[in-house]
Length: 247
Image (spheres, rainbow, N blue to C red):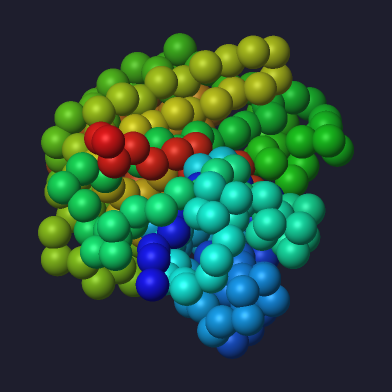
């Protein structure tokens, strides 16, 4: 028996998220079925991040246990032959049998939220970015983002359905870049609450539109109340860029 780690990219548009559920096809389900066809074994992958419906990834991580004779480093090539075009295994490698993608001493995640800000939609961007026709002030968005850096209680930026008791997280980097109509909010931290990045994006969009002053972000943080923050931005703009385990 050996444990193999996969780094996976996918377009999440046509999936009901990562985790298997009864109401639609998921990335986890597709991977399990592809691995069974490849190895003949009943395999259940363990994912690092359970991305929501419509959310994309460039570097999600998963592991599975197998007795297959396929070399671990060749697993990515073999598995990609069994997967649809919108799911790709970037690389594969063997890890210790007790290596777990979620329970590690160091787990640093980076997300990006993509916005297409123009008077009309670009049809080539509709699956991977959120369209906003109203002009956004990126400089003000950057000012507001500064208040989110560091360790804070992010209860205001957490979906009310979340069951976690500890809502303190550390944001180590938050940058907003702009290139023509393309605006990207890139955020790195030691963990994220349910919908946290999308709520941050929705709040910063309201700052960019002038509904909130940048200083309002600090007040929202301190309120520790979900109703104080902006709406949850749509899932199609969100990408899990990668996970750093400090290895």
